[in-house]
Length: 382
Image (tube, rainbow, N blue to C red; front, side, top):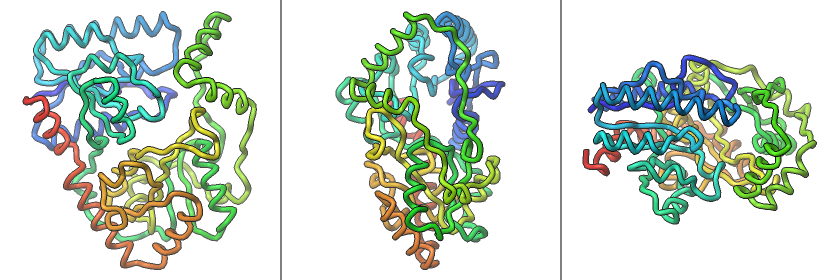
């Protein structure tokens, strides 16, 4: 089966959240499943997420989707598989693709963080690939077609074994955000002697992604405020105003835990070879109080077990459907539980070994891209 991909491919490295690993994962997973992939070499899909004026976004959509439908008319495929945000979707072109006899599936993994109500643009797909358990009720309520499957992760075969522990530490890899910071501040204030090491963007220096300079008119700003209120509610708007000028500098206790940013190879090595690898599933959102955040299962919940990590992650609803908790991975719900389980795991090498073996076995047998592709194609009877 030949699959056309619109999965954030781009020849450029834009100042938006990381995206280059998504094409790497999905392309290799498709090939391992025995299928082939193709793409429009002239399409810059990530550019559709770069902040810009409405006119420039409309031009990007017109150019990109025009090239895409022309390419597909000349190069038939069996399936259109995308990772598209609502602002990237052109419903009319998706319908044209479907009229060519090509079913369209869209993967999206930020429902819980982004939406209270699903965007209507998601209704145009033949199937929506939904990894977050908490998002399923949104699809049931909206009546949009969906399938619940894990996020697509691919680990090269040479990495699919339990590696020797080379880093006697509790390793967290991820960019800085306020919720992650507050969690680690709480942990270090209670047990500063825990050997936590933190790697990721923006921890050492504040290099937050800067939006493109756009000259908004008063009406633009008013419309943005209205859209925020409509999508998030009054309470979220009040929290946004309250936090507008608040600052949360890293404490000196936490600063010493922060390490340099790592490349992809180092990330894999640290994940696989640390005594314990940490997952954090809370996320910043004005829809929830700062000290009572919501959670959802993240990409690391797949990557770490696949790499054979002894994985201790923050509990999120739905994790129990991915793993046998306590046997494949361990979870915590707050700073105190984290400290207790981290101490226990550090002291019990046999338990760490079993978690590594069981977690990797489960992830590589059940949660791979080839397994997900089987379920997707079976669902659509392809």
